[in-house]
Amino acid sequence: MTDDPAGYSTVLCLAEIAGLVHGFGGAGWSEADFLAFAASLDLRPVIMRQVHSDTVHRLDEVPAGKLEGDALMTNAPGLLLVIRTADCLPVFLVDAKNRAAAAVHCGWRGTEKRILEKAVQAMVRSYGSEPGAMLAALGPCIGSACYEVGPEVRKSFLRAGFPPAVLAEAPGRPGKSLLDLRAANIWLLDGLGFKNDNILDSGSACTHCEPHLLSYRRNPGDSRRMYNFIGFRLGS
Ligand SMILES: [Zn+2]
Image (tube, rainbow, N blue to C red; front, top):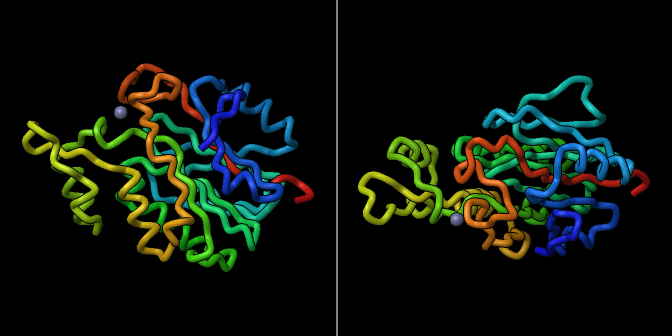
């Protein structure tokens, strides 16, 4: 992952795809900054009211009203799919052959509802995407060392079929677990037939530890969110 002076980071494999625009935003961007950036590329941003659901929207054009949900997908150039985060994991899915992309909001609730799996399945149905040929890029999120959860969260993940390895015991904290959001979502991608090399994971940046990223757990009073975006430019 490379950091752009504009305040977002990109993934080389995605940057190489002609016409594809993407980035994982940092703390430096206001909503106005982001909207100006989108306008400068002649892209229409689609920003949902995110509700930690497993709702995936297919977009063929800019929606008339504000959508409620946690994943967007499109094969229409000119749209910029947006996921806003502060600790949750943003994931981009790309089917370069069919020129389709998705942006998915994977917090613990969405992950437990397997929203990433549902987004991939929706791309398979809508665009004929093949998981073995798709790319997935994981942005920064809260790291497992900083993400303590209670026994009820652990129980719900195990009930949803996740392996216990994604919830290590929190050292010296009986009953508490450390949730690894990245590992849980990579496990879903593995199960769908994604190739290891096609799962692009920066791996290191923890939103809770890195001061240049926003973290709800570090600063619950801060209502700012990071803008993560992906879309195909017009004429591409
Ligand atoms: Zn951390």
